[in-house]
Length: 330
Image (cartoon, rainbow, N blue to C red; front, side, top):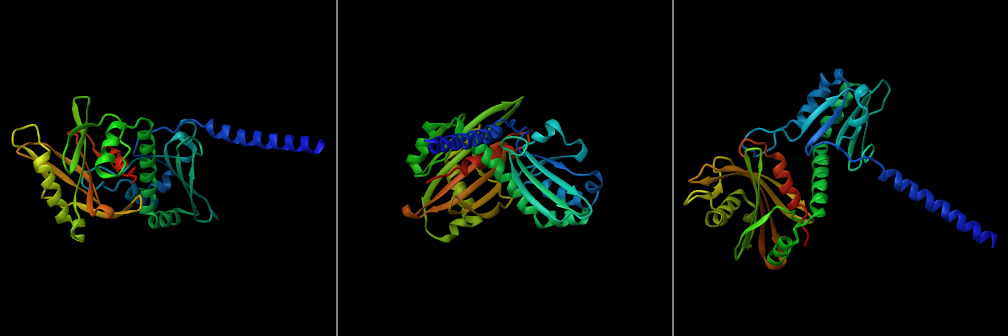
């Protein structure tokens, strides 16, 4: 009997410890900052040297296929001695520590000082060594922060999914997307659907549109830029009208869309980023397009998100659409 009681007490203590660990994590404050913001903790001497140049290249590189130049992230810096209290709750942080004899290392950590936080710790002996680490990881650092932002957006969208629209998309195409409230069905067609969300930021109109359409797969040329433009124009010219009579959406032909092969939830997918305009109207903006093949039904599925936000930056509106598309499930 003593041994059994002892075992029960041991288990109780162990479970209590587990609960304490969980509680400690849960007690972390929420992370702060807006989507796309990154805080870099770096000494001023490094910021003005090779390290600073690489940080600028990583975060201030222009986002592709936007009407006006916008950096991929909004970055701010703070000296290590000033990195305290509320600053430690930043959503995206790069912390650079330099000291004589320190070995070069990079460590990715989550939820260190706040919930839903991503921290990249970089240590090195001097400015040149930090710059060397950054130069080797330019794309990786960008990717880590972008993927985390997409993950956060998908999580946010799941809190209040627009079930009616989600169900209709699933029925039409056989794939599920997590679509948040605010998007309304503008029209459904035999081969596609047009969803749209509209709001005002001050006096500025903001429209986020989603076009999902399909057609028969005939050859690998379906992933080419030429095929993308032809098929997109074919759909939008007859389906997506502007505010004026005889106006319709087309790809802006003076800008060749940027393309990138990606893995979209285990589906080989071509990502395209370009610009659209309204024929016979003055509207225009960026679009994000995913093309993949539904092999079971021998069809090409297209996910297309477009943004109209005159006078405003458009990067984060596009990122929201990217998160919707990357929530894709069969």
